[in-house]
Length: 159
Image (cartoon, rainbow, N blue to C red):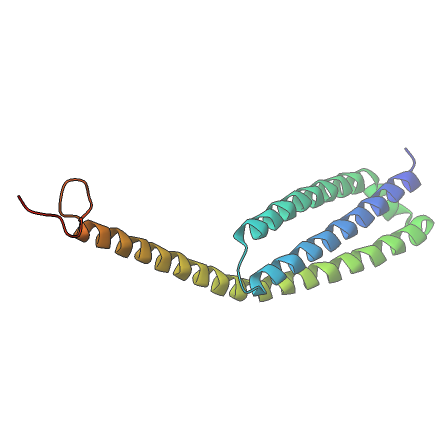
C-alpha cells in the first residue's frame, strides 16, 4: 500500500469518527429531552445509553486503526512532509472539527448531569411514595382482618 493510500484511509477514519460524534450529540440531545420531560422515561434513557456505548466502541476501533496506520507511515511522512502537505492539512482540519465536536459533547453531558440527578431524585421519591402507599394499604387490610380468612364481615352475627 502506498503512503497516499494510508493517508486516505486515515482521512476516511476521521470522517467516520465525525459521523459517530454527531450521532453521540444526537443521542445526548434525546437524553436531554427525556431528562426535561414531565415524566422521566428511564427505559428510553437507558436505550440511549446503550446506543452511545456502541458508538463509543466504534470510535475506539477507529482511533486504534488510525493510530496503527500512523505508526506504519510515520517515518516516511516525517522525512518528507512537503510531499503530503495537502493530505496532512486535510487531516488537521478534520481533527479540528472533531475536537470542536468533542468539546460540544462534553459540555452537553456536563449540563445534563445535574438535571439527570434531579430527575432520578424525583423518580426515587415517586417510587418511595408508591411503596409507602402500598405499605399503608397492606397495613390497613391487615388491621381490618379479624378472622382467619383475612376479611372482616360487617354485620357478622356472633353465635
